[in-house]
Structures are given as structure tokens and as C-alpha cells.
Length: 405
Image (tube, rainbow, N blue to C red; front, side):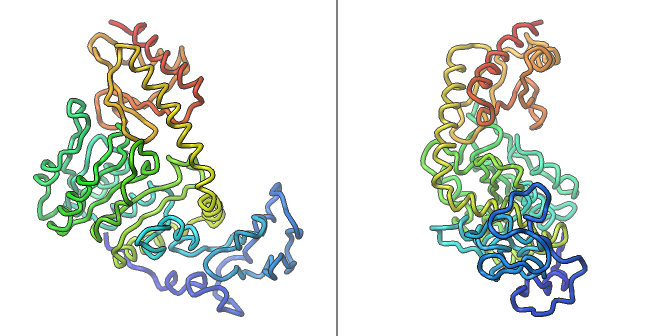
């Protein structure tokens, strides 16, 4: 689909810079409110009320004038002073810089999106037309499959196989590429299996994209959760690589709906921005400010998350070792695994899932969520408390026995 940036968005006050406009007569809405004006929001410092009451730094509460730089309020001011205006269309400047901090990339290589799902939708609808092709691993997160199908694109599947430890076969990827291939879609770590790519595999995939003048999309939502050494951000491997991630999986902040696209190719990022502007103009400034403040302290918060994931992973690993009903490919990262029943013909699967939920109040992601047989299931070990995780794992054994044919 050919997205073009619209003059009304390119030339909007928030893109020109509110601080450069004294008398803004272009807006189509009422004066922007502050977060603290919403009933029930705690107010720190100056009272949040209309009428031009000043907050620290001389920023007015009413009048539609946020501070320069794309942020609606400096991070050292109380959150209740956040102006709920249209934000920078490409996204919160400070957050974009933190996402690529310490890398060869800059904030200008980053576009904030409504979660990774929003990023994947933007990418698919920007790069694909009807009858175009993409090479995509399967099983996969549904958006990577359904959006291209809705467009009318042809999907060339690279099926990951249990007996091959869900390893990606680069030669199969190479064989699937045709002149109509627009991009290759992979994930690292993989959802739902937890399989990881190697540095060499990413280099080979990037080289394939360059050789065939197509793109490589790497969904890296679980990148911070690898159990071994972390690879560089995928977008740093080549200008033909697009990296996608979010706050949802690794940080436990899905309600902020904050994701991002990273690419070295500026014209491509501009096309993605055009798509974003046509879909929802910009991201919510409150969520982006919260995400920014979290990222400022990520080094404080995230080690505890990582330790908790490893403890929970050990619970699953110990459980797998003590039973013979299920088998798995041990994941190398992420917060999920994808085991299967060893003897599926001996279990009534409909009854198994029914008993599991109705009797033991336990829920897993059945294989058909990922276009796989139903005796496979995704177990998310990152979300539940350790006690609930152990109880749920034990319920899987009980349900399989009670559903025996």
C-alpha cells in the first residue's frame, strides 16, 4: 500500500513546534487539558486548574503550549502537569533516544507505535500489495500472518519443526525467496517456542535481504529476555533490516501500548510514519511519557524481572524433568515454551482442555492459536506467580490423565 504523508500532518503545529507559534488559530479542538485536571488524578505541587495557572518552570496549564522538544512536560516536573495534546508524530524524543542508547543508531532511526502489533500492521500494509510475497516462519504471532493475508499477499511458510529443535533453516529461507518477495519475517527469541537465532544466522538473513533487494523483519519483542549472550539490535546488521519491539512482553507493561520500529533506512521510516499518521496520527502522550520514565530507570527495574523469569523457568524445567506426559524443546529465551503431548492419540483433546479450564481453572494457549496441532500448547511461565505456575503445571498432568481415551 502506498502511504503518503498528508500536509495537514506534516505541517501540524506539533510537528512545526508549538514553541514557535505565538497565536495558534489552526487547531480544531478545545484547549488541551493537563493530566491533573482529570478527576481522581493525584495532583502534586501547583493546583491543576484552568486559567493559565503556572507550574514550575513557567509552563502554563492552559493555552495549548507544551514545552519544546516534543515532550509535553519535562520529566522532572510532576506527572499531573502533563499536557494531553497531540504529541510528536514520530514519538517521544527522549524515549526514542533511550531505545537506541549506546548503539550506532540515533533517535531518528526509531518510530514509536501502538505496541509491536501496531508496528507489524504498519510494516505489512506499507510493504505489501495484493499478490506480493513474503517469507514467514510458522508457528508465529498471528498479526505476522493475518495482516498479509488480509492484503491478499502470498505467504511462503518456513515451518519450524519440533524434531529439528525449532531451528530456522537458512537454506529453506533462501529457496523460498522469489522476485515478488517483499520481506522475510522472523522472530528472536521466537514466540511461541523460545528458540533463538544466532549471530551468524542473523548475518546470513541480512545478506539474503541485501542480495534479493527485499527487507528482513525481525520481531525482537523478547530480545531482553534471552538466557545467554544478547545479540546486537537486529537493525544494526544492515540497512535492509527492520527491528520491532515493545514494552509489552519483557517489561510487563502491555497496557501502555508502546512499541517501536527501528531501521537505518530513513525513507522507509518516513513511509512508516505516513502510515502511522493515517491510522492514528501520533501515540498517546501519557503512555509515552510513562514509558520514557520507566526506561530512564530500566537498569534499576529490569534485573529483578530477569531474575524472576529465570526462577520461573527453573520451575518449568524441573517439572518437565519429573514427568513423561509432555515433551519440549527447551527454550533459549523469552517467557514462553511450546511443549506437546507425547502420546496425543491417547488423550481426548477436547476433554483435556475442557477439564483443564473448568475443573482446574488453568489456561494455556492451544496449538491452533499458532496454526499447529492442538496437542501442542504454549505455556507462558513469565506471567503467573510461582505458586500458580506450579499448580497449573500439575493440573496439566491431572487433566491429561482424566482425558485419556
